[in-house]
Image 1: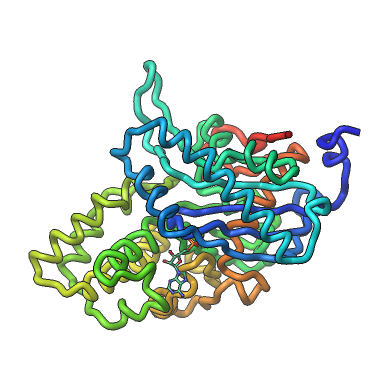
Image 2: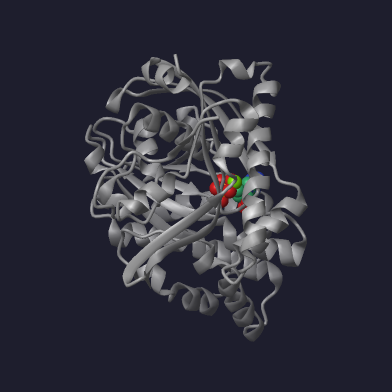
Length: 395
Ligand SMILES: Nc1ncnc2c1ncn2[C@@H]1O[C@H](COP(=O)(O)OP(=O)(O)O)[C@@H](O)[C@H]1O
Ligand SMILES: [Mg+2]
């Protein structure tokens, strides 16, 4: 039987999820066993590992991610070259586990976002949104010998949505607890919030990108401290918050915009950092004060958008943190203080390593694609229609 047809019929699939987020720190790879349908989908995480990018690879990704970068030929080449990196991460995960690729049924790869154009712009007389993830899934399928699904976000944009955030659907399956309203906060390069009301209806799930998280802190720490990131939030703890800088940064129109909304490096990339630096100079701030104020901006904009946009905020009992930012103790401490009396935990409490959750999301979407089930939530992305996400690459 043809491979795709047998996958559609198979009840339990071993799926690898691959993702590199806005931080472009490396490929998160997870192996998960998935079965069932609709609300009864079962996910069992079998393994997770991050395969960090070398400095050169990260530099290249950040270079082409700059909104002013225009060398299309180089982007096309990087798309193919990164496909190999993603494939290698899948192969290494399987090897590190002592598994055989033959046991893997499917791969879901998010790829690496290099553009996220969620603000509609006129093109051929129509208002158009767009997003672009590189790390070609056809390369992954061919190199691994496993059917690979990619390009999940474009399907949602084709349905009229912003293509992001997509994780709320998966957060529902992983964390929803009946009669317990909870919120999930992913602290990646960008922060996104999911609201789970504790009902059984996927329609009740809601979420949006609150704004920048690690992206701005990483940038400052790289430039002034020559480190990849602010380990455990130590630099933030050593600086002070400059109120005038914080107030000025908060004025950005994104924070006031009503959801559905999603964002990326276009908005909170180099230009935004330059603004931080300019004001930092004006107020004679030390580099650690910039880092602390930027970190404070992250937590305060999360808290304020929660207050402002989440109607059911009084009922929320728990905030579950995922993403690399869950390791930043400045973030977690300040979020605990701000969200008090709401309990603040990391996804570890639910048995999921915070770094692994977003990769799991794309393993799940690959499964949904093969089974012909939609993965987007209309009120989250603003899509007009629920649709099956992704593009299936055979080999
Ligand atoms: N121990 C740590 N202390 C502070 N921050 C951390 C730590 N580990 C990871 N991070 C942060 O998490 C980021 C990666 O998070 P991730 O969820 O992979 O984001 P993305 O999805 O944007 O790639 C790193 O760039 C770094 O800023
Ligand atoms: Mg990452």
